[in-house]
Amino acid sequence: MDVVSRYPCVRAARRFDPARHLPFVIAGVRAGWIRRSDLPWLDAWREIFEIDDVQVGLHAGLDTVEARSRALGEVIEALAADGRIRGWRNETYAIRNRFDAAPLALIERAASRFFGTQTYAVHLNGVVGTHAMWIARRSPNKATDPGMLDNLVGGGIGWGYGIDETLVKECWEESGLPAALARRAVRGGTIHVLQEIDEGTQAEQLFIYDLDVGADFVPRNQDGEVADHRLASIDTVLDWLADGAMTVDASLAALDWMARHGALDAAERTALATLGAPPAIAEPASEGEAGLAGRPADLTPGAAR
Image (tube, rainbow, N blue to C red):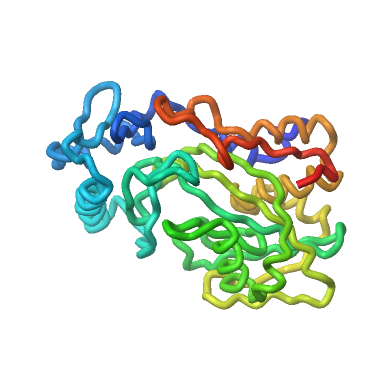
């Protein structure tokens, strides 16, 4: 059985049909994907969106970040009031196709899936040596994937936050890892996800880190978003991955660690490595992937980072 058949997260990471969507275009740049079935939600906002059979464009007259953000904010608040956008976070995300790019607009995090905009997240594999991994179970009250198994640490990167800064913040909030220990985390791979989900489209780049937390560390959640933690053998984690018990993002992050530490065979590592680059359909027409976003993951066990 190959890695795609064995681990459902690998197939899910590319579960996207462009025929069911229209590109969301801002200032000539493909900035997201909007489901065709969601287009009626935008009919009342024709002064903001220019919609045809090819794309959904933000009106050309909205030519500054501030103007675009205000217009989109008005739409997003209305869609949230109507129940189409759920799980309001009071967190700001930038619309940008590279992590280091200037934003095209700023939006509420909860709206990023509706518009299918590129988002960014950090995930930490908390391990004890090479024989065990700490796994969290998400709170049943989480807006996304409630009750599912997760990495020890994972979180989205909001506008104004750096990658390492977010990692340190999430380490404390989700598992009580102090900053001094969190800063010892080692960069792993980078994985790109493009999947259709209930909320819309998840187009996300995962920055993966590893940290050997030691035998004496016991995680303690600080923000109420984790129900419990469990220390599991690597074989047990692989079984959970095969069963789809972990979130797609967390599964991919865990598999990244497995690939780099000899738990996957050569063919599985090769298949997983394809997720280290953006899917071809996701390449922006006017803004190529570069820098952090364009670096494929080296999934060879023991590869230098």
